[in-house]
Image (cartoon, rainbow, N blue to C red; front, side):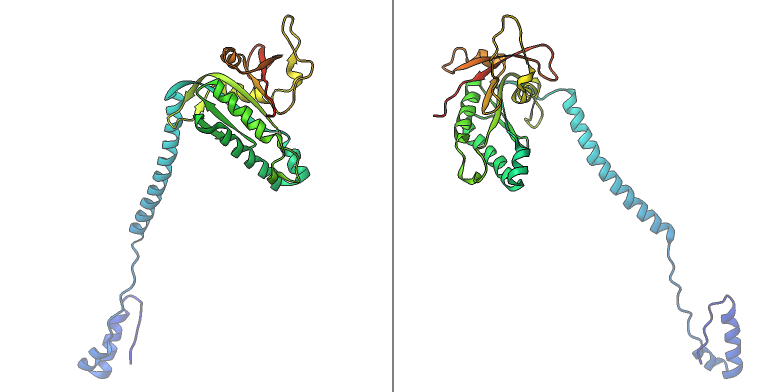
Length: 267
């Protein structure tokens, strides 16, 4: 017979009872050792879990601190500056293209524009950034930027086979020239880039009549390449044709801005 009890003091009572019944020797054989109770050191477990949690939080904080340090590093000042030409290009009516012909064709148009722009830029491009419906590229000179723009427009003039049954791909583009800031990764920043995007998308209604300034009767809406005054000045001594469009206001920039259009032919 084996008796078990988990109550305090019951083991001694059981031993006395067994001695009375079976004798001392036999009773000793009947008393089984009390199985050890599993003891959890909750303090140690809590300490371990706390250290693990603190370690995970520290790792996450380290990542966030590195990102914040990187941003502060850029705010303290750029890694360098360059004087370059900026070419901004954007797909015209991309939303209507997706609505009428479907998202698949609209995506093909974006991909086509990106491929053709890179091909037109060639080896002279110094930086490329995808902007969703277009791209922004920088070049060492205005001549290189305008040549890339003309080559791109000529390549897109006829409807590419992979765009059927959609319409020809139409774009707006602008070239500006000025000082550009470089961050530690070589990414371009600065007013010349912002101006290129504003100039690229400027509407005809933004142009105003100013005494003594030329203004086109009809402002082109698409398949155009606008130039800012600095870019136009760079082209005056080159064999590149352009004409004045008029004077306009640009969002985010003070005053009036003279705008020029790069003239190009289909061949």
